[in-house]
Length: 192
Image (cartoon, rainbow, N blue to C red):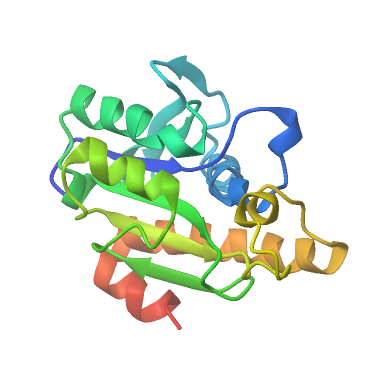
């Protein structure tokens, strides 16, 4: 990681109606990291809420884009340009993943958006798919009509909420591991 700051962007949608939904897992992981790091006073900066400070010996920016999921690249791209960050070494994006079982993590450092509109927007705005991702499984769409939007904007059951709370803590641990031990070590420890 070469940039002065490591940008850690959790994806989600702003607004109370979206709190606790599958699509807002990235926001929840940012909240967990903010609590762990003591960076709990975010401020509006451009198109996102950001908290800056030291965490695990690194200068970090915890950010929640306020552009809504499908336009996440506007906020993330703005931050990457403003802080002159190299996406490949200084950007970690946390998102939900309907292709993973509930609570499972997958860390990747490049690749397609996998059908995720927030990641698709980031790739388009950065002009590269080479950036670190922590994807948190929220389970596939259960209804046969294929209404993916309704699924990702839906809330977790009581049982699932407990599984996801644990997954969010593990995702925060994975980010901490990336900061302290590097991405490959985090992949080895948290993928699977």
